[in-house]
Image 1 (cartoon, helix red, strand yellow):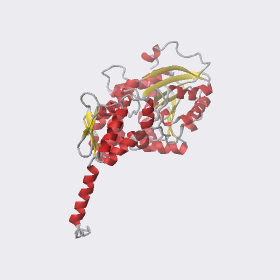
Image 2 (cartoon, helix red, strand yellow):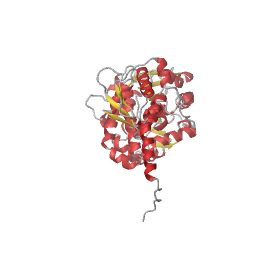
Image 3 (tube, rainbow, N blue to C red):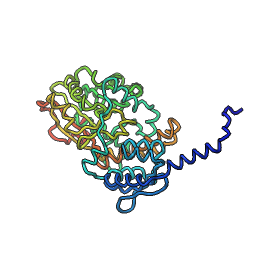
Image 4 (spheres, rainbow, N blue to C red):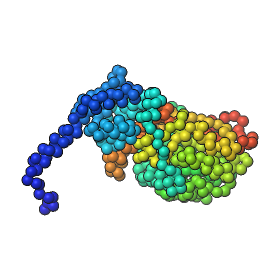
Length: 420
């Protein structure tokens, strides 16, 4: 038996009124076209055709458009005009913006060179969420504790969620992730019996790799409960639990003395306000012969993370410049020994993640919902574009005490099997 309330006697009139309101919302006004044209000109005349709610097209670019951006209603259009990053991200996620064309190419086309004053006005700076002890745990939980089953769908078999290193053009993602682990281990010239502390260990694969292939003892810190549980289970299955200790705790609570400090993909979640704090942790952990490596997403010049990504995907994240990273080293008399930028390796990594995500979009939808699928599709497409266009960089910085003279004489050890 139906439990729906009876329709009012004026149902037809109410329905007609609703349709009239919907039609009014869909109708574009001359001011909409004027504002959109001005916005597109200020944004560098991207080769994108914008379709207003009533179907009218606005295009100010040259040549053929890369794709169409369709707005379902005026409210969504004005949200994009007021706050482009947030407005586009939320509009696409909610299905109020549809894309005709390849999403990655459309996002790439949207990033045209613009005057500095326009960039500052349109992409206004924001403070990322705080990474205090409590704030960091909340921020990490929002992203990394979505469930191991979700990440297993589209990461490589070893569950590595950082930039891979492609030693050859035809390397697979699995091969490139293993190559990345050897790459960072060789840079630190790890030797059997040494003690390594890893800050931010993900699902534990790098820590186990260091122990298995380089004979070191590792203490690995992470505040993601799901990742730590997975890592401990991995260590037990591999018979390495006595050699690798996984600790569910904040990097600020690291104690003890180690030969090497390793951090791959964690600095992005620290925030510039805490760089000296991180430097102090490293300072108390490394002896005179100690050395370290920090692998991090970065910037060529200071800028906040994309506003939509920071709000909905990576709360609290901040990609630093190399100059900002020096706040970790300079106050504690650390010297930088080597810097490498793997930006294009990350573009390829993210593109592979996106392709795998798309192949499993149905399974992701069953786990979450359509909004989640659209959000992560946009995030992975945007990440690919950001590294392609140089909006983001990927830095690997090797450092040690300023008076330490015991490092390798050349970089040959990075590209051989020595010490493996």
